[in-house]
Length: 131
Image (cartoon, rainbow, N blue to C red; front, side):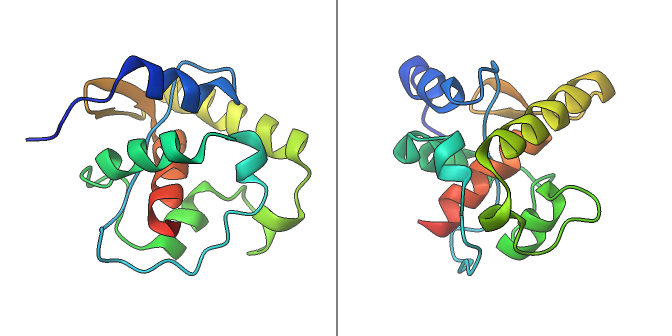
């Protein structure tokens, strides 16, 4: 059984994106070679994202490989270096649009009692895997 996530940690994590969503993915034993890049400017509370990611990795929809999770978050046609080369406002817009599309299509995962978009859950997983 997982421990609950506090409301404060949840709100802090999603504040940067201004969405009522967030969370994560992947195997705690998985080593990450994925650079968080500019995600840290979109989600400045790294500790909150790591905490959400720790819970999210328990969801099978997220995946257990950091490179795969990063690829699944990446916009279609973007290069592997997109996290380090994309401007923060463009990254924020992509994530907001992807999260909105997730909710509209029903791609929602339950992470520690929070319903979040699959995209934001994967982003949180990247934070966890990179920690």
